[in-house]
Amino acid sequence: MYKKLQLTLLLLVAMLMVGCSGIIPDAYRIDIPQGNLITQEKVEAVEIGMSRQQVQHILGSPLLADTFNQKRWDYFYSVDSQEGTTIHHHITVVFDNGSVIEIIDN
Image 1 (cartoon, rainbow, N blue to C red):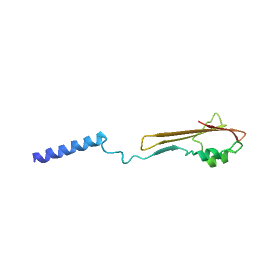
Image 2: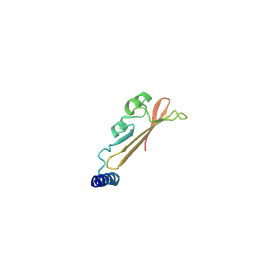
Image 3: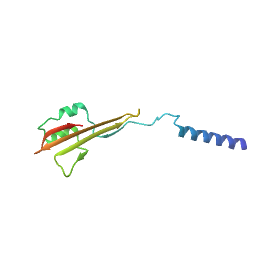
Image 4: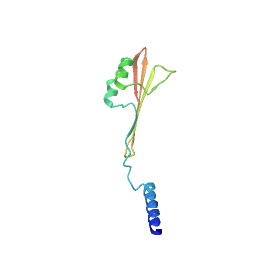
């Protein structure tokens, strides 16, 4: 009886140590995209003079539409990958009278 208890405790401690030590790779970690997917093709498709509807059709709804500055839309895209790398992309589209006057690729 004592041997079974001792073996069970040893097995439990070993499992806890393996779980906390990081020996087992992150098998369930997935890429985590956040924001609007911004590709170079999409950025190049947005042109000066386009309407808000045309920009929204290409890039989607802006992640940030400033209530105090209706002339500016900001698009962010971030991906944390399995390998630990992070990709960030930020685009600002500036409007005047409902048409694009500037595209800032930050």
